[in-house]
Image: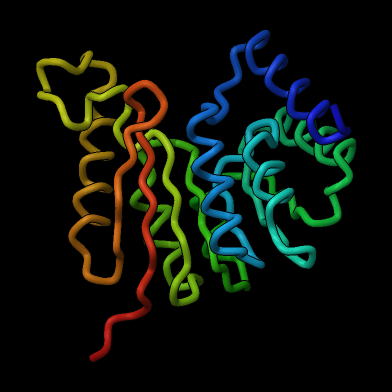
Length: 206
C-alpha cells in the first residue's frame, strides 16, 4: 500500500467512525474516471468535507492541475488540510472556508470542471453562480442527484422532512437536463443516490 492508498484508507475509516458523509466507492470511481478522461487543469469543488473526493481528483489531474474547494465547516476543512498534506498534494489545493453561495461569486478564475457535493437544496444556486466561470467543454459532476431514489419517486414516498430538498433537487435536474447549454447523463450509482455528469457547451449565442 502506497502513501496515497494509506491516506484514502484512513479517511474511509474516519468517515465510518464519525459518520462523515463521503462519496461512495462507485461514485468516486466515476469521478476519478471523469478526471482521467477530461484531464481538467482547474477544478472547483463545492463541499470539501474531509477532502476525500478532493484527494481522488488531485491524484488524477495533470501535474500542473489545481483545485479550489469550498467547505463551511472549519473543523472538517482543517482535517482535510492535514490529510491532503500527508498525501503530498496540498500545494495543488486552495482550501476556502465559508458558505459556497457567498464565496463562488467572489472567485476570479476559470474552471474546466465543477464538482458539487454540498447542501443539496442549494445545488441550482451553486450551478448558476459557477456557470459564468466555466470554460466551454467543462465537466460538471453532481453527487446525490437522485437522493435515495426519492427524486424520481412520488412525494408520498418521501419523508416530510426531506421534501424541500427533493423538490429543489428535482428543479436542479430539470434545469440541467433541459437547458441547451448542458449535455447531461444520470448514473444510478451509490444505492439510489445517483450522480449526474454534464458537459457545458458554452454560453448561448445571441
